[in-house]
Image 1 (cartoon, helix red, strand yellow):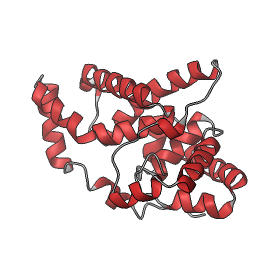
Image 2: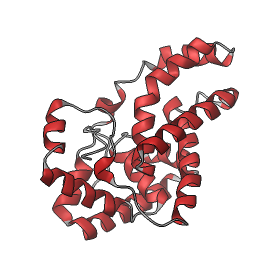
Image 3: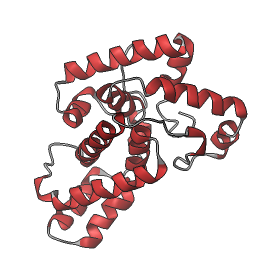
Length: 215
């Protein structure tokens, strides 16, 4: 399956324009709290969705999201304009998630996905997501995703749900882009084995349907 970013433009257009974002970041770096609040408002939904897909617990995702924004605020002076702000923010969130996941691996029990409320979605998605068949399907999908390693899971979520390039994902994971491609290849192969080729391809293909309960 060829990796391409045909839906990246659709996904990213919801953020503030880059020129405006850089101005807001500059103000925030000077200590303007309102400016940083603008950044929080611009990215909180995307960040929460990403974190939820990693930890799959609503309250824990809220906690991690808050921690990530606090860390971002405290280290904003380290942000480089060479990278998208979202990439830098996802990097911080990924590290917090990774620490949480390592702790969870030592505990027994899994999240009851049917009780977890994800981010808001369209009316059409709600109709599908509320069906019994969809509930069974999404649990099966998340059971499969849970069997991926944290780097594989993160690579899949950022590539297929956030439209990030392999280079950007490499920044988040702290690995070369070629290693990201390897993670994606292995993740796709494993999902196809666990879900069947057609179901796996259908899920991976919907890069602009950002519904954490259905996707």
